[in-house]
Length: 437
Image (cartoon, rainbow, N blue to C red):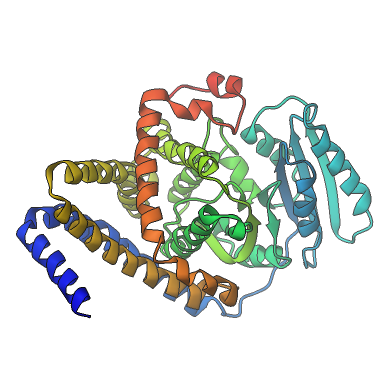
């Protein structure tokens, strides 16, 4: 106890001496981080109060667009979980295979599944082979052109689902004002490595909790490209998916602009419509994914949609939220944090560096623990399973800080090398031929 008091005294004494450092990071916490957390927490509480309300139950027919490339036999899990959906109306499963000429195993697997499930009531599987690879966007649009039903849900070919997912998504669309809805993704390979455990926590808090809370305010940041539902008529009206990379964020931005033109419409998020996905289980795989994801943020916000990021097109609420938490927090703040840490290590004594980092660690640990407990008590549908992650919370602030450094590098990489043109989501000739922003 005496040692703890001594360390606490040392930290507070050091920070009091170097007040200028506190004035560097405290305004960011008070003006950006804390308001966001409060919005999320209040939004989750509001959602939880209305989650069990009795609503009219509608069961429209659904068209699932399954985007496939080189998954091979892995698409069996995805198709099986869609066929096994407990749903009283017709489900159309469009399996779109990009580059079917090269990906023969994926194509043969899809053909075999038609035979396997041909006698399942209210379920139809249709294979759409795209012989020449065109990328993810052309795959999605090919599925959209063939979709027969008004409710369209796009899913990745390596994602599986709970068998009540279709019911949960349809329940959201029972509100005629909902034009699109994101589904919740959980990490399926959580036990594979340290990196998958950290990403599992990230999905629970940064994705599920944040999206649940902010959707309540009408400020959903993004509908995941791996799992999202849309009204087909609206999707076609905004032009479907668009070329380049980060097609999900690009589409979400255009849907927000549509929402401004048609007041009363809304984008929603369904935390109880559950999909399961595998995340990178190695450091190299995670870095490769995040360099693409984070670099795409800069490309979409500050290059492709720089002229569309206006209150007139967004509305003041969405514009303010996107400006502060889409551009400032997600794009600029990681760079500023990285520069601050370099400055700290170069110009201040080790004791000061440790005091500042210890203070930040405690603050963010409180934020993270509070968010996780709210997620666990109000959102999680697998409480016992998720509770096992409590022991990993103490490490998560280090992971979150490190990922901020990765984001900063991704921003520089996009500025210098235009890394979005090297995305794995489409062949180089597709990305190069698109309009250059």
